[in-house]
Image 1: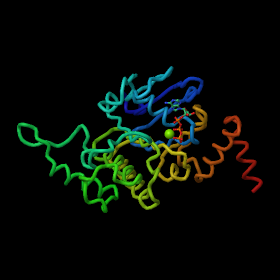
Image 2: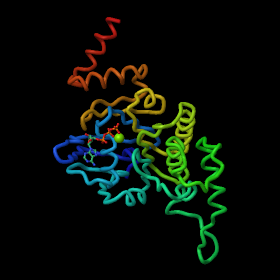
Image 3: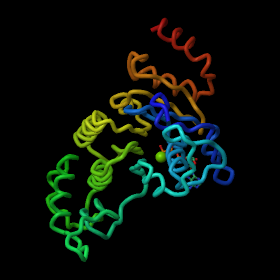
Image 4: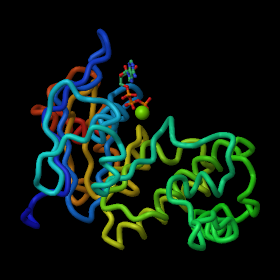
Length: 267
Ligand SMILES: Nc1ncnc2c1ncn2[C@@H]1O[C@H](COP(=O)(O)OP(=O)(O)OP(=O)(O)O)[C@@H](O)[C@H]1O
Ligand SMILES: [Mg+2]
């Protein structure tokens, strides 16, 4: 691997479910140390793309390169072993077990030669993780996860992902169900995490959120590439809004720049 290689590259990904074509030749790239925001409307194919990438679904076609080498993860555990951790939009918590157990699922701290579960340590560390992610009010990590609000559950998923090391963290609609204040705290934590050298894919249909946190933006529409921008080539989020509207309206991306100039010239 050369350090010039992107951390991750996905090329020409196709996936259909019955007659639904969820991905139709989609590409993405994530560079070392950046937050790439993947932006597209509801149903555009964002979650399917991530699930194909980590082996939750098998793509029909396409190539995936991790650290410059072609990979074909058979399941998300293989991706995790390689350093890719996902906070899924729709899955990821076990309802009936405690917040603390959910945080450490599969990596519970143990003590002694018999490997007894170290509940005290787990609860202490769980409290620290929840505090870090802004859930200070939740001071009882022994509560079953199903007793928490949707926003609190979401925070537990994000806290877990941040607690354990990853080279690439993928967050699928992470602010869903969070209050504005909780969301701001999560975005601040993600930026701090980027400073530590962790790369991220931040998935959202909310362009303003994407703009706030992203270094680079890739747009997806109907399972296809719909534009790619570095933050420093944009004046603000409005250009992303216009770009997505244009493509969703059936416009050809190659002609998009001319249209923007016209729109700006007339306002
Ligand atoms: N397991 C599945 N079985 C059948 N169809 C699916 C499945 N998963 C996704 N789809 C379909 O594939 C398309 C893309 O869905 P996907 O969930 O990837 O969109 P998304 O961009 O993540 O949307 P959202 O912003 O609502 O989360 C949709 O038409 C969806 O109905
Ligand atoms: Mg989704």
